[in-house]
Length: 55
Image (cartoon, rainbow, N blue to C red; front, side, top):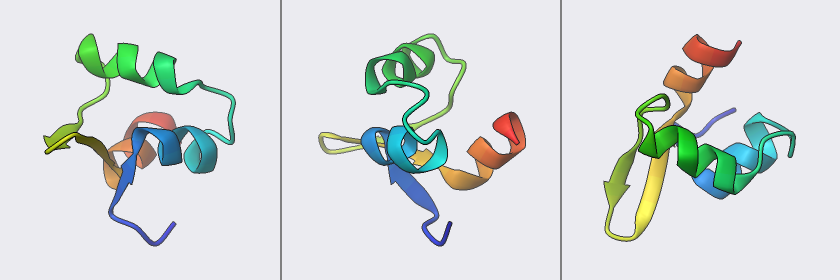
C-alpha cells in the first residue's frame, strides 16, 4: 500500500478487500472507533492507523 491516506471506498475495496462495507466504515468513523479526517467532501483514513488497528 503506497498511499498515506485512502478514501472510505478505497479502504473498503483495497484494505478490507470488500469484507467491510462503505456504510460500516462510516459508522465506525461516526462512532469514533476509526479516526478519519475530512477535507472538503472527502473523508480520508490514514493507512498507518489502519495497519496499527487491523493488522
